Length: 175
Image 1 (cartoon, helix red, strand yellow):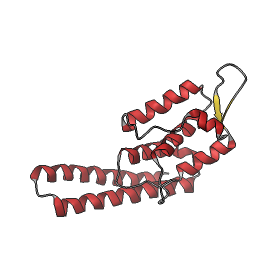
Image 2 (cartoon, rainbow, N blue to C red):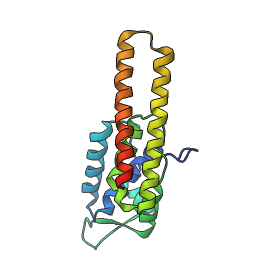
Image 3 (tube, rainbow, N blue to C red):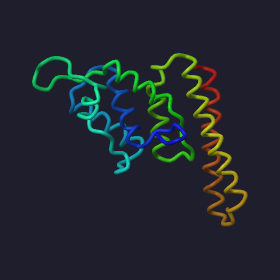
């Protein structure tokens, strides 16, 4: 993790793999494909988002095979569940880059694994990151946006950030 307790890109992939396995056992190839598909749909293809191999998760004792057949499905171990919950509780690092958006998407996908107080804490972290993002964009608009096209683009981004913040506040009340 970074010093601010936010996830490194490889830890983001680890969160995806462990979270997907929390939903039930999967064969190695199916797990790898599910992680690749989810990450690719949220963040697009990226060399930065290459994570640890599933074999490394096995070596670390976070996942284990179920059964003795040739390609047995993998499942989470207790250590894997503990690691998953720790990764879910990491902070979100502003500005909202593709990796940060992936972290938020993964948190939202697996938020139900946390208890109610932890869920609210995670939504609070997302609200904090969104508020910092909004402040950064407004500062940029007020200091460096001299070109009309750039101003329009920034205003659009600000509207998206405001919309996300409004949604997160309403979501916090439902969690």
